[in-house]
Image (cartoon, rainbow, N blue to C red; front, top):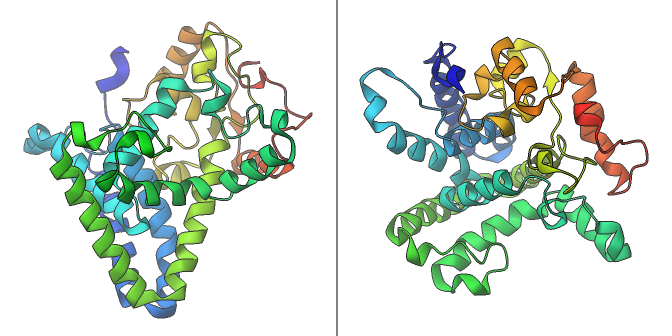
Length: 307
């Protein structure tokens, strides 16, 4: 992984993009009423910027602030996820579990094995695809304050009581305060924002993994597609959403670096196979929407991501 710290692209650009999204989202949410809807594109950028903060790659080497990387990424994560009702510490734990498991087990996926459960499985699939998981994270954020972790089915191994409960409670207090403030200012428009965000959350969580192999080999942990889109869009969404296979292979590499040729070469070396990225936004959009076909889609080849 010798390339992981080399030549970070525009080290100030990522944090500045994130800061601009924070200002845009919070201003429109505070103005309220119909203007609340204008916060949606900024919240999308924050979603991906917050994802970078989970991995500690939003703030990397930034002048004399390098020694405060962990604190700055924590602050960024709180700012990114609190407006949509999420406790950053819980989101971080959940996303880390996604990387640990990948597609090694049916229980780690939205679409894996749901046909075994008939209509119930399909209902669950579409509910999660349309954002149920987003709301479950929001509810669980409050439950962990008062209930033992074994009573919260979202993640029984996540126990803030045994971690930094004060920090967790502080994050949750910010979430509650902002939720009430933005709800008061935006009313039904804020609820619309939440539902749109939740659907984006559901579709984006699954798109690069949809229909791929589950537990088929040691590589199943990394089973994901990779895309190449315009540099501007790739930059605005922090890279890893499109270069998703590279992100799973190298989770501590900044998203804006994942499309680099050296990363692609290292990717092929690690997987011992030559990967051909899917080209263009339309390829990504096609995979994005074909998830609506349900957990069974005969047009998808399990090993397609590394063919």
